[in-house]
Image (cartoon, rainbow, N blue to C red; front, side):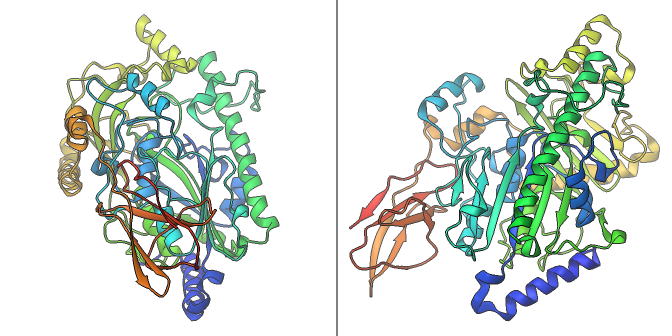
Length: 552
């Protein structure tokens, strides 16, 4: 099945037909694509049945689009998941699985910031950057190479510094409105931070928007006390603020009359922010809301829900497919919309490794119903102390109850001192994943199938996270030295044409004319106006950026 939803399929086909029929004017008809990414959010919004907080903007978006009910991140935390979104690769394949590999939250990072980050790394490991295989490019760069304006406001956090060719603008001011040519199609990413875990405790002076007597869906694995209820009121207050931010972004597109040619994606960067959600591989840590509004926003109510499995590694292929751009064969994901859609996937996969000062190694495979966990460090307990998380009052309630011996069985599970090597959960009958079925004879066949699927996947992606991080770091940076991108080389081809290359395999090359400030991605020989100064730079992801070379 190419695209399950007939209406969305028709919209895609119409856009592709228009694109192909006026290929000579592709820039005028390629769709715009907007990603609205909310931090740390499970499907706890009205379109998914949770009406604790009113979300009118997201409800309207869902009415005009498709609500995906089985969308999953590749990790229960942001940086590894964002690496998957940016590259279409599993973090455990490219070395982006540990949280974090360095202070790469912004595109530009000062040397002193990197030096200070050393204290947060494991012994013998310096802040480092993930190094994908040589052919891999960031999604935004591929789009730029095909005529798109690409902006990111403003979080990067991909476990590596983006090449200078990745974005036209990645900053707090980045916006599609800033593109110099109003006819140029754009790919714009907007990050909403108000739903982040830290905002549960960081803004106590902000008014709570949820009434004190509200009915709150406290899960059984948390202590239902005043502290946890206050945290949940803050959580849903943040959801209201998040929805207001979405309303503003959609309103800008509407005011500019761009919604008829824009795909709008809304999704979370992983699951929820609360204890036993964020960082873990239960659905509470991996499952995200995903609403996609097609151009025009005309989806019949009976076709507004899609249950196929979607993984973050699929977003690169899907976005390129919608833009009419060939999907590279190196991506580990598959398109779930557009002409490149091969049909639904059977499984999604995820991993959990180091988080700040503590390390674990867990892998997950999930089909439509069952979740399989492989605990690669079974002698290690479930709960890993994290100073950052322990600032949350609901986490403090769990710790106090554990110390006092007053937790229920569901709450105490997280504090067991060891783990079985395998776990199996029926997410339909046990949505909180509290009842391990791995030893149940009635589920032996399901266990065998998912176990085999895990082993096939781990071998297929060459899972880098199963071993020691220090050994992996040393394989990336021999003698503790980061690989360097070799500088660009100019070659005159005659008739004013210039070839620019780097001897580093996999390096992206950027160039600028005269006083330009934005690096253009080099895709082939360029025509240089007579007397124009040309600057060039090269950067392979994970390597140091080359020095800039100038041709006068």
